[in-house]
Image 1 (spheres, helix red, strand yellow):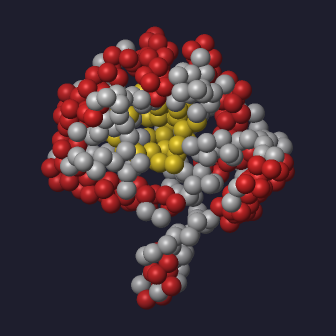
Image 2 (cartoon, rainbow, N blue to C red):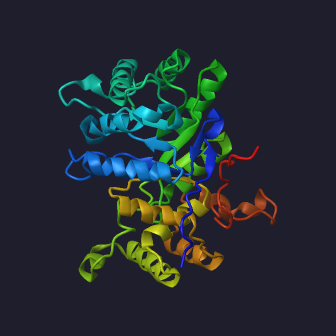
Image 3 (spheres, rainbow, N blue to C red):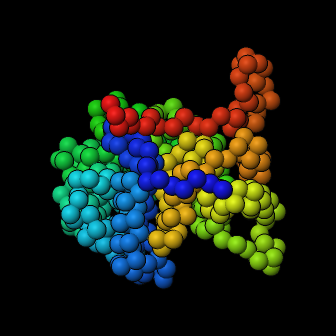
Amino acid sequence: MPERYDGTMAQWVLGPSGIRVSELCLGAMTFGTEWGFGADEETSRRVYSDYRAAGGNFVDTANNYTNGASEEMLGRFIASERDAVVVSTKYTFPTDPGDANSGGSNRKSLRRNVETSLRRLGTDYLDVLWVHAWDRCTAPEETLRALDDLVRSGKVLSLGISNTPAWVIARSDAVAELRGWTSFSALQLEYSLLARTPERELLPMAGELGFAVCAWSPLARGALARAHSAETMARFPEKTRRVLNVTREIADELGTSTAQVALAWVRHHGLMISIGARTPDQLRDNLGALTLRLDPAQIARLDDASAVPMGYPHDFLEQRREMFVPDALPPMGSRREPLPAAPAVDQQA
């Protein structure tokens, strides 16, 4: 059986920003029922309060989550302790179908959405502002300069980016560095036992540039947390069935939930985790992943079942690795060792 969670949550550093955040981020997309799922305000407040009691300080929302209700609820929850909570929100996705400029990464959209988020959250600054997705219609330099202006104004303290190709992020980081603008400190991406393609480009890039990485949908939209009937399993692709079966086998061996196994696997690979608990019970189960220890054989079984082909040029280079690298180096794409975690904060120092 896994150990009982004792309320001690490690604090990590959010990349070069220096901001201290808890290793589990509370995703607030479930705050509100406007999208046909999620929780009402009373239940959401209990989830928030239980998360804070467990030592969490990092809450993530977005300008479009539940049509703005998520930000409004979160603003009420943090009102009495604003400075103790690291609040992050996002912009880019449209919020008004009748207004083409309600979304995008341009300066007009940015100004409008940040001012709206600040008002809903009842605060005068955002700890982290994420670019929610790549806007192909706006030049990266325009977005970067507009973001830098917000940081210089004090309305935003640090920047992150999500759902964007690695080459766009890497180029943007170089441009920001060369021009003396504020660059990104963190990367948010989809990552789970059923979504490992970020290992090809995004995760190596984040490691090289020193970004903190936060995994969203670590339970693959609940697929790794639910029990599935034989009929449902039959509709899944073979690889998905293999991952679900191995996850279930290990959960049974440890006497725990499949959700805890899936979260512990992501944590083992050095990523922060964004959990979207809809109920206090789901939150408590997710917290159990912090004390669940998977042994090397179990990690290997999960790695093997969920592995993705690295593709070109990785496969091409791996076939010719003896031409470029010493034999002592592991194969490209190897997950023998977890990705380096952001340094934890020594509370005693």
